[in-house]
Image (tube, rainbow, N blue to C red):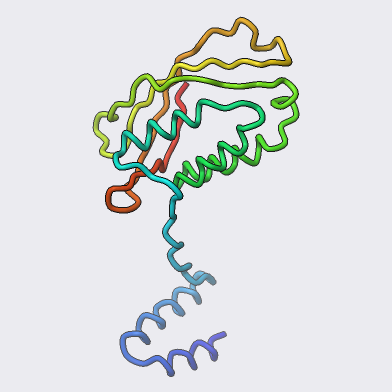
Length: 172
């Protein structure tokens, strides 16, 4: 490995040689080369404001049924970045073959009641929803009253004038 690195260093010359030399020295110490920066995440759809991005995301996130939930999560993942995208991709995979979800005919519906800036944060918001879960083929959810839920949403401006959700942390 050292001989190949030396040949590459000799061929580079100048400032490029110094940077490459540093990487080779680091690799010799740690046995790892630094990875390149990952490509920027793109979104299929964004919103003009942070609050609009949150409201659109949450409305889609809390309104689903057993047949649509996996596709809904995939669509939300495409509209999100970062941690939110990863969490939604996982949710889509987990719900795709969920036998009990489908057999029970489980559905969720709700309304976004409040989106407010989290004090002391520029890109985080408190989101309050009121939701109801129901089922057509099981009595497990019979008589269940609507419930309040709180989450912290983080947004990122992905392009000038385009906002997307980058984090979603349900609190209740």
